Image (cartoon, rainbow, N blue to C red; front, side, top):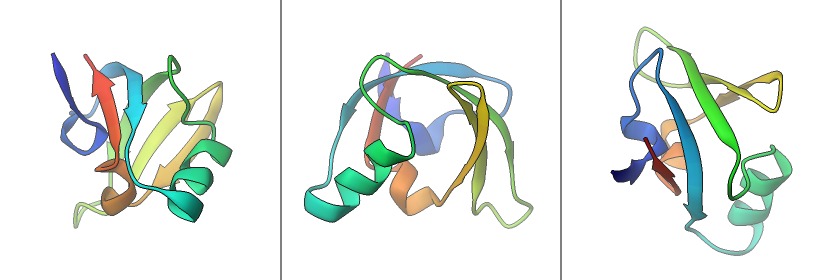
Amino acid sequence: MTTSLREVKVGETCKVKKLHGEGAVKRRIMDMGLTKGVEVFVRKVAPLGDPMELTVRGYELSIRKADAEMVEVEL
């Protein structure tokens, strides 16, 4: 099942399939370690829904929902 990282629920692990967006935005997402094939664990989501806290490549990462929307994942 393919969806955006934004829709993954807390406690679920997914795998990055594709990055949408372009230029600087895509580069920034890749610089954060979100590249194709990487496993991402959703640790928690802030009370108001933004940002999401993820575990990627063994470190913790907070990402805005707008950025998470551009990451296509597979559950």
